[in-house]
Image 1 (tube, one colour):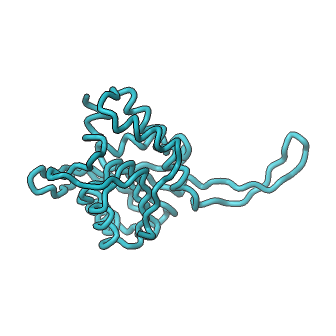
Image 2 (cartoon, helix red, strand yellow):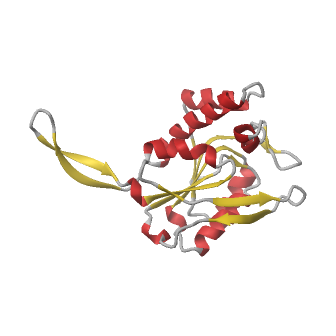
Image 3 (spheres, rainbow, N blue to C red):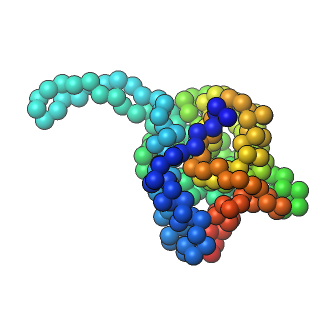
Length: 212
């Protein structure tokens, strides 16, 4: 899919092996997710909004520079697991704004239900919107989030979904319903199991980040 970018790098692979390992404790898992978040953020911001300026160096030479407009970027983590990527992005984008979307999943139907929405009213003012969702499985929660963004005035062409693990089912849902939304993933795993979990995956990212 042209709208999907999969990271290919040994540093990415190193973090993925730590996230996949069931022996990784909560500290190891959190640290690996944070480091992976930095790598995802670098890819996501390749076309970030910038302005041109000039500075004077210690050599008393004035030179042109490019200044990142990170205040024009909105981060939208999907609760809970999306919080695991926020600190990584804010380290590199300290002026970015953060709005939270909460989705609960019915474990029988796998449908997503919205329970938190803190999106600002001025979505049109942002040049880029990053939806942070470490596990793009069925895609139901992510698509519901994209629907909420669209209904709130966000331009899908300005939206990127950032995830650690993805499968074709979730990617296909986004591609069919929001073809202008780009997806950046660390890896695309082969299957979605019968209870809607990515396999081999890393288990429940939210639980491993916050509960276990």
